[in-house]
Length: 108
Image (cartoon, rainbow, N blue to C red):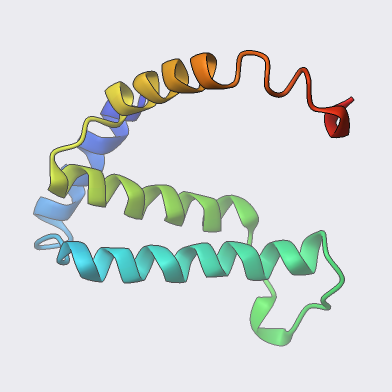
């Protein structure tokens, strides 16, 4: 699935099953919540926190997919083509970081 296909499928799902998009501000709050879920699970899987009963059965892949879903909702409702945005972002990083990481002693 391409990014464009995912954006289109999410839009189709929202229009048919989801009834309508939440407002942009509500989606921003939901995104914050979903990123928090990723952080919570990461701290238990790879950090020092122990699992709680409420964490059982949670999968990092599902939590990351939730983050992508909301990002794509926000992109859809604000008219952003994420394929184009990501391509431009790659170009920006290629110019900005062409030597920066290679010359960073901490990364050697």
